[in-house]
Length: 78
Image 1: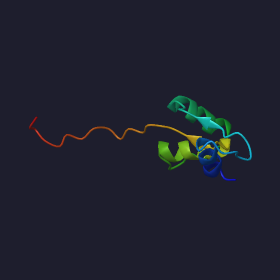
Image 2: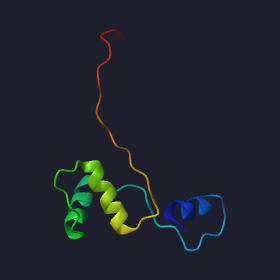
Image 3: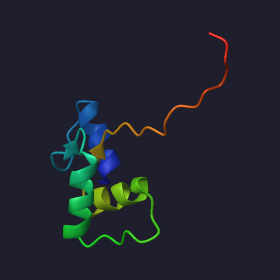
Image 4: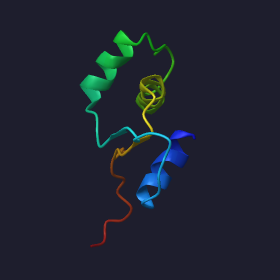
């Protein structure tokens, strides 16, 4: 089973091949330190790409993370 299949199977109360490994959130400083430890190539990559590479190296089946790209003012009106 792939990580996605494993997670969805468990979520639907099925019987996956093994218990899915899931991380709710990993803070930015931890991801960057893990990237160092796991020897993830960070050159020319933005944070989201580094985050995905770290998750892949950790072989996590699922993650949940809220990425913020900031706010953009769209109008002066309230």
